[in-house]
Amino acid sequence: MSRQSISLTEPNDDWLKNQVESKEYSSKSELINDLIRQARNQQVQVNWIQA
Image (cartoon, rainbow, N blue to C red; front, side, top):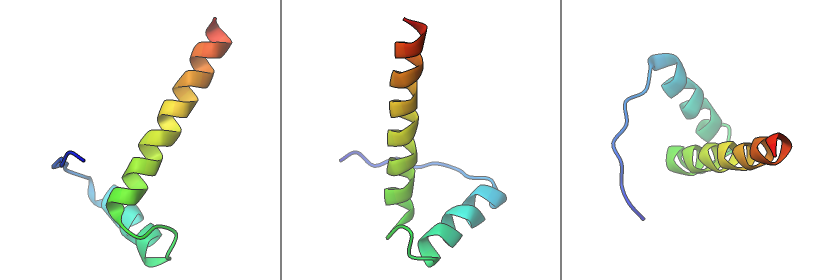
């Protein structure tokens, strides 16, 4: 797995922390990977609708 360094705005970082603290996700990395996965799936659906 590749490692990345990203900068987040304070509200976004706070939201990520809250998601992890609420046990919804075990880490920020897991959450970010899930968000990217969801965005990729959404793009597939958009592409299908446009086709």
